[in-house]
Image 1 (cartoon, rainbow, N blue to C red):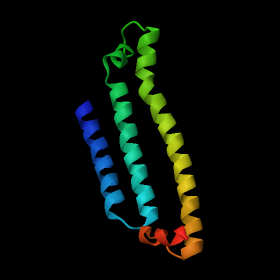
Image 2: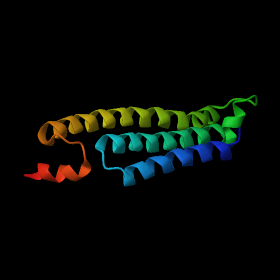
Image 3: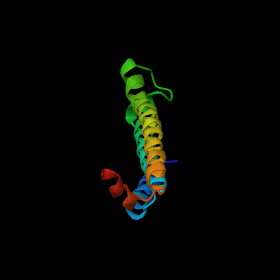
Length: 116
């Protein structure tokens, strides 16, 4: 497994998510596409963290505090982004439920009716 392969998977996930955000009208589909985009970014962060020269030090060379800190930065970022994405999804779905109760639709085009 090379960093190029991991970054290709990450870019593919991000591109699929971006296409879903731009092309879909259902709020539920847009939220799921945003989650795909977040996962693409998380995979890229972990890949960069895993394949950096400092991370290579963890495989057998003498350990230093700086090498460990550098290698775990991407993983900590991934946990943080996942927690934020979970909160964002919960809030977004709560808004979708409120919109459905008001308009009986989850289409993005019907959201403009809620301004009044």
